[in-house]
Image (cartoon, rainbow, N blue to C red; front, side, top):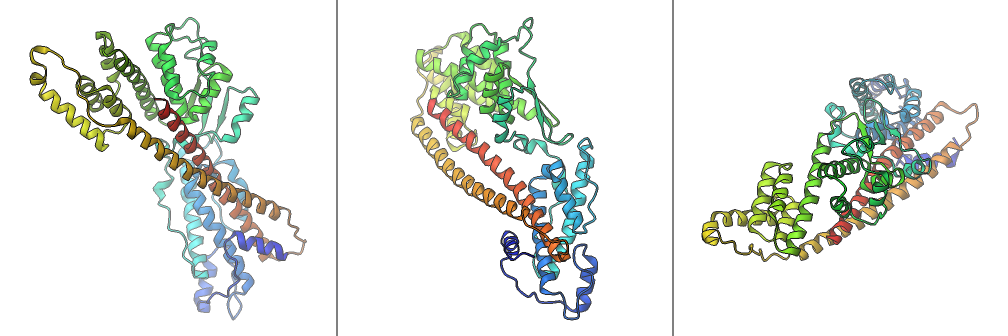
Length: 476
């Protein structure tokens, strides 16, 4: 094999040294070779040659990386993008299970993942014994059962696809694998029928999303201010935008609305109840924040305001609703806002909850003859806490950016090395060991890039979410 190509493969597969491995007894070695699919079946009297050991090391590195990708990104393995890698694994003499068709059922795809996992684990352990290396731990079989509720972000559209979609003026598109993680996006029909009480004029939607610098809270507040929209339409519209944003990201959703004049509607093959609950809670938060601002600026609520606060609280989990109603009755508005936007098990939240409960028990003493005195100030500097939170988010953002840059550099180097490998010339009489080493390197590259692409996209999404939270917090 070309010397430079050999160096490339050695470097990528993290095996820069060509060491002579300690050999097992010829009897044990013969048994291991016969049990392995990818190892040569016969060894010379003195054991495996340096070239044979090097070939096995390349196989071992490729299988390790494929197993990592299989565990971290099962969607890649059951997609058509895995076909070439599967073919190369078969060329290494692995008896690959039949790759499921895109239309295969979830159970068939889960079965394929488990069978492939078992095969790669078996071969990895044998190569590990031949090379005196420890393979990565076995991935439990239950890992390959589809758990969509835990992995919404795996369905997120790649950032690289955004510009192309908008330039092609395609409001209707799909991505993912059928019967696994397919997501279909199309303009929502809920708000399009002029005869429906939920109708929203496309021009109104474009106007609402024309300022992309607005935070999500500002956008929802604009919707709540629209006097020509009914209360039901406002709720449905905010929930639809939020639900789409939880899968597509909020930035993408708002650009989609502005470009196409319609809220994106999602069809997916997983339970959406968690998304709907989260979207409804966001609507409740938007209404509560608006009412709290009115309470702070005007100093009082009308009976209708308090009734609205209580009505939308019914959409929350009962304990959360009870906590908010107690807080808004006895505590200052800033304390209620804290409980609205922070976990209830937070130590400050627990202090506020306890204080509101204590005041409720003392209401006859504090409010004799029904005379209401001003709500209690908690003496907590909520502005300082908010600044601390923003500072923490900014620090986290820097950490995420540093991680992203490292991954992008690694991604670039891997793609460059992959190009060099692709351009390498093999004469017709190339040795089988060299050919298989070349295949192993290609398998390694494809598996590593599949893992990296998933990590890079996840960090980009998290960065965007963090930036949105920083911006939203600074505006409140």
